[in-house]
Length: 379
Image (cartoon, rainbow, N blue to C red; front, side):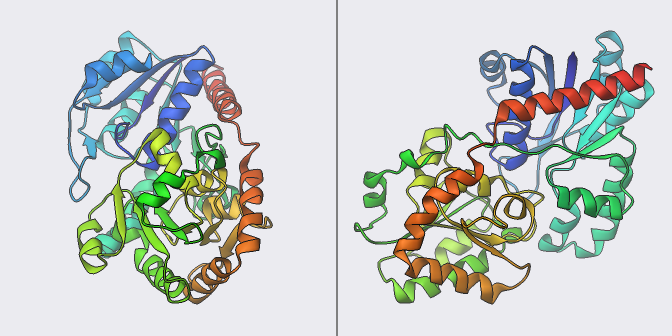
């Protein structure tokens, strides 16, 4: 098939949506499909497009306020309409609901190209963390109208599918996520890196990976680490990533380590060198970092939704905490920090919980779903 993918975020931007969409695109290309990626223009585009083997259609974009390094696409209805009228794709996948995604949806509908969308981000939930809580109902209504214009909306968990269907989203389909279990592996543990963090042999490395931003509930991560630190003075808290809250957090807690954004093998070393992974966010659609930590053999403390509900509930891999129960979150982390024997046992359990997740099988399921939409539209 000829498949067009529209996304307003793409590597080298670092976020769950960009990396998930790139993995899907590469997986489809590996199955022999022709992939066109429509996205905002980035610096270094020429080198990037030659390197990945995909067809890229860079579009005008602008910087996303309060999210340094991220962009959104500008409306491009007429250009996309002309382009797809001349080079018609069999099916379209729209990963983001911004101006570029919206105009791509309109152009595809006018050309009667089948469309699937991806529900990757709870923008309605994010609004309240940036002083726009009053807009939450409006944003949610927009998201529902956007996705209901598509032939299918893809979600990563059964929990999210049930939630959206209960709130009048139509044609919701489940497409599970995968994790690169070769990249993220317990063997990436690096004693030299732990020494750089100032740890002795038996000291604890408590790690968070993700955006350092208000919506990630990092106040709870800080409180949890301080509770651990009172019992284990040699423990260190390492926050991997970047974001608008980093400067404030580092000024308030000069003993914390902020290695910044890490990629590839370097990122996998940071995961595998941890003893405990804290993920207190309540604003995720899925939470890819949960799978990456588990694949790295690191016990996880997270709330019971998204990836944690799918892969931690019923598995002895850390703590899957009832939503909003911050006291239970702290208590579970402290108990695991205190129990060396259980923590070492959970390293094996964590890896086993995600060992069977295969990016190739996810790409094959995605291709089959897209083929179904194309066949149905043709009929």
